[in-house]
Amino acid sequence: MTVKTTAGRYGRALRSSVVLHAVMAVGGLIMALYLVAHMYGNLKIFSGQAAFDGYSSYLRTIGEPLLPYSGALWILRVVLLVSVGAHIYAAFVLWHRARAATGGKGGWRYQTTRNRRGVQRSYASFTMRWGGIVILLFVIYHLLHLTANVIAPGGASESPYERMINGFSIWWVVLSYVIALIALGFHLRHGVWSAFASLGANTSVVRRRRLNQLAYAVTIVIIGGFLIPPVSILMGWVR
Ligand code: HEM
Image (cartoon, rainbow, N blue to C red; front, side, top):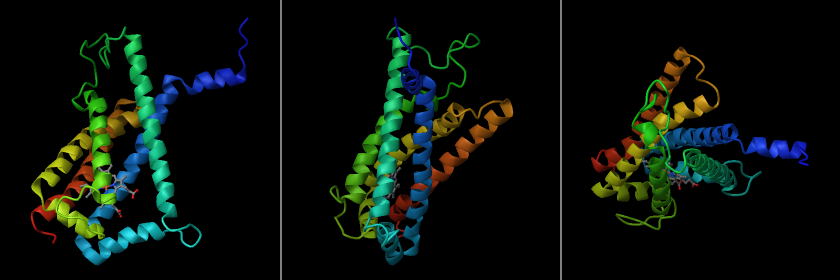
């Protein structure tokens, strides 16, 4: 005889696809919020070296003396790591379930009886998995470049401002960032829409339209804002 305990039911509920979609949505939205703040901070490059390097060191002294040096930054890093981990875990489990449910063929995403090729079919909606992998590889490259100073095209420097100028004066470094940002743009365009839909916000045609507009607006602001510093440095507008 199977005894259904509350803990057992609770555990099953936590592993349900609905909860995993919500986990993916919340993790993704936390990262999108971080990207807005990060993009805004990068624009400080236009205020000169002292302002940009001062901003970078300010990030490490937030909360002092209550928190140790870099304490707030480490809290943020842990939040981001948990968000990325939960996002990727949920994506992987849901992908595995979708394959299993279609006999290992993967099936047509968004397939309906009305439309064999599926509603909501867009280039973005079909590039989420590969886009996600490109973004993950980019973040590793980016951290080795601008945070750890390990990859230093144009020359290593203790100054974050100089690291930016040295790196983005080289066309292929800018190109590598542009490619990653295009992948991020597709991911965000579909991801922002999908996250709010997973959290139950697409309940009417009007709301769906608003969600689409919001997804485009967030994507344009984040990607446009991120592109401005590298392109300006390459053009020689910031030295
Ligand atoms: C052109 C685009 C970008 C530029 C110019 C840029 C610039 C920088 C710089 C200068 C730092 C080092 C800050 C410091 O040490 O004080 C940094 C750190 C970081 N960036 Fe970016 N970034 C860009 C895009 C991105 C994107 C798209 C992501 C995520 C998808 C990202 C994620 C991060 C992370 C996680 C850190 C480490 C923060 C920390 O823990 O210290 N960046 N970025």
